[in-house]
Length: 600
Figure 1 (cartoon, rainbow, N blue to C red):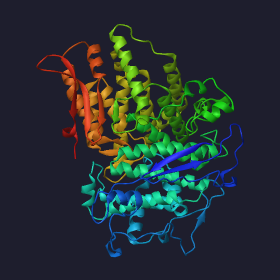
Figure 2 (figure 1 turned 45 degrees about the vertical axis):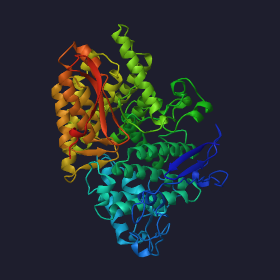
Figure 3 (figure 1 turned 90 degrees about the vertical axis):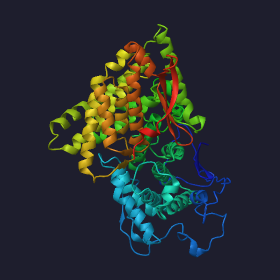
């Protein structure tokens, strides 16, 4: 029997669900859910107190209270909350379009809250939720479904309030803020941790049914949002991994679990959000090991065996193939193009050997081994090329080029129409421009991977120039559309695109424009932090100047391919590169702390 093991603080939660290859699944609402089918397994671990008065921050976060001290009820920062405060007044009942018709949701009301502080934190999240989806496309998940699920699941309500509290604790600044600094900004940080702990406890105590699994997945998404604001990327990566496991079980249990694009609205919406977050984790050097079946099942295998082995993010193609093989030749709307772009981008990222040398230390080997192995293969190819035996691009790369071109062929007419009606339909143009910029960036990763030649990367200059121009427009568009402030989203914004253009493009003018845009528009798009990318691109600009002083263009590019960066276990941003030793005249691999390049 398969299980999804999800670690939340001091507990592990196992969701067990039956899986029989080839067996038909009933609708979730019709399934007989018994302890033998679906159960919790909780295992507490000791959490060492940090001895902070009046209560330990670690215990507040993971348990909602601290057993290390005896504190009078009058000294508590927040009252003990009941797991689910029921409203005594009638509420408006509604059915979310395309959602499970058996699930009736209620609009959030003030009766959900125990006190005014809770309501204020919840309302703060509501005020900014439209930005979490990126602000370019309409996002039913963020705008409607999650707020309504806060009535059905107390865990979702507490997770939302935790985000509202942590946002207040950071004083709406997206720069890195320490717990001490957040704690000095009033009671918000302590309350945010407390609500976070309550959300975790509600997930533990939830009823054993498919609805609770949906609620746990939404909480997982909200926990990622919280940890990004909390600046704890290690925890954010862990929640992304947990979310993937739970998504696998949810889609396997649904009636259309063998088709990720044929699932119900909730499953499809949250699936695409997780695909984008997985893309972000890959760009940070953190990637789950791809399934061993992938190289074969996506092309050769068929039937129930391959279907049961495939991960949730790849199922849906005819004859047991990956869902990307069902991509239509054209897309009716930009929203359709975006959904299929998520599928295409995910397939190319996980199935190919494209990789970036930016990562995080202190993570488990399961998070890093896939990217580390990819990097090593590229470095071996680079050494072979220096020895005069540059390996030819394999047929596998051609498959990914073809996948990208199939998507772009279907998108091309929409892109042309958006350009023609830019003045009348600017929002549609912005949506299309975002997709075009992401396509061009992934095109560069596939056609000129880490081990590519100088000529290969130089040929991409026009595409990187277009990427920077599009990103400049997108940033200016959002600045006009939203209130002037630092933007925080959980979507695929322009930040990462500017970082790649600012480090890979061989035109210094294009690189400098990308750097300027990163500096002028501080923001976070999920795991992507413009301040970190700005520091890396500025350090690269210094490196480019010294590197250009010696050798041919190919030799200079070979040295640049040794660039890497990581965030160490102390949270320091470190960069490694080949630099010339002024004493010996040799090019040596050195490490540099980039703190001086981080701006406030």
